[in-house]
Length: 160
Image 1 (spheres, rainbow, N blue to C red):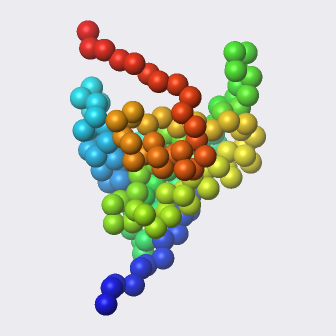
Image 2 (tube, rainbow, N blue to C red; image 1 turned 45 degrees about the vertical axis):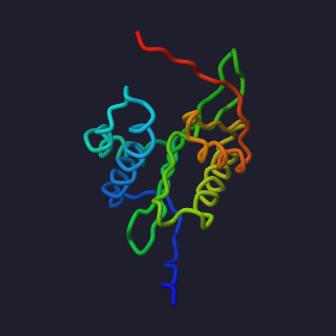
């Protein structure tokens, strides 16, 4: 007999969620950037995350969501929206960071986070939404493509 699934609520982050946000962000850095980009400081979330997340909750141009399962943060999404420029005169929403703990993957939680982000972006007047993922992270690329994002550009890098 399998264990019953606990309900996961997607909601705006609150001050009491900072430790859970730092834990999820740390897991994301270790799992994604830590295995794909040696130039990334994988300790960043623990050192700078608490202040960044606390400030993000008060930022009117930002979105900070948590996936809450019985009081535990099991996922998060951060996003921003920026006014257009003379070069690209449209308001753009950027999905900055998203993570779902492995035990909660494959049950639609990522899609729920994206849906909340998209609704928020539309309400904020954004005409475009964008997200960046490592080219070697095929799972993330497939997920974002299933969520309606299309590949637009490639960043090439070399060490000096």
